[in-house]
Amino acid sequence: MSSDPTAWICRTCANQHPPTAEPPAVCRICADDRQFVPAGGQEWTSLAELAAEGHRTSWSEVEPGLFQLTVTPQVGIGHRGLLVTTPRGGVLWDPPGYLDDEAVRFVRDHGGLLATARSHPHLCGVDAEWSARFPGPDGTGAPRWVPRRDAGWLLRPEGSVRWWEDRAEPAPGVTLVRCGGHFAGSAVLHVAAAAGGRGALLVGDTLMVLPGERRVAFMRSYPMLLPLPERYLDRLLAALDDLSYDRVHGAWPGRSVDSGAREVVARSAELYRAWLTGAARDPDQDG
Image (cartoon, rainbow, N blue to C red; front, side, top):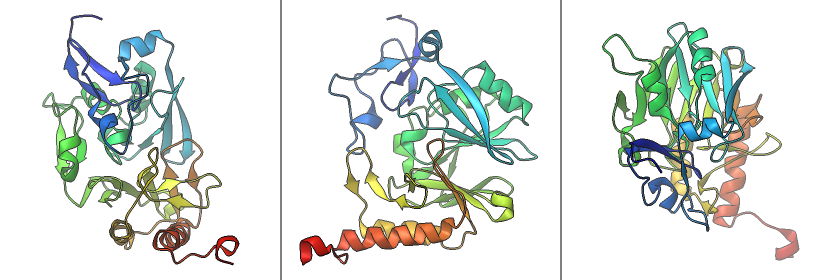
């Protein structure tokens, strides 16, 4: 490996670390009990190496004013980024672990980058690279909105980090809402104009949109199958209570609840709570 500083990217979670001559011994994100280090050991890559391997980005429209960014072949867990376009510039939600000139050009052609934001520390990808590609008049990059409750998980603190607490508005009508649960700072992005003005939530996996798109899940860890305690579920639901939304867009392509999302969240929470607390009954086992 080169002795020149490289911003190493974890091949498992696709989070980018600060530039160093040699890769870190372990990825802090993957070593946490919510994630995992592969049995074969920690593996690292870089933007240059991923480009040489043939990775490419592509964009497609999810709904008017909202575009998804995907990477092929997938990097890390393969989540999508979501670009919310506004008259003042775009807000890029949950950037994946790779970008190229085509992705940057697309964002420039659609109004530029006003800010990046993320649902939680697993889905930060190469957000610092995005910030650096869109410098402002003062030379600093586009703001990276990071919840203060997750400050200890920020891998690249350099650049234009903007801390926020429980709610923040990176663009008019685009609101960050801290829900907690998966991480203390786990968040959703509320887009008031989405879904034809009925509102939509961009959720990452703060709420996981499940196959069939009529259920969502609430977990401390999805890969480790660690459930979310009931008190954290209550806080998460309370954080969403005053938001108007009819649609939910999840972390992976095709994972969206297109209508009736508020009711889907409520029913999913009731089902989860019933099985978590033992109130649910399985006739095959209790009969």
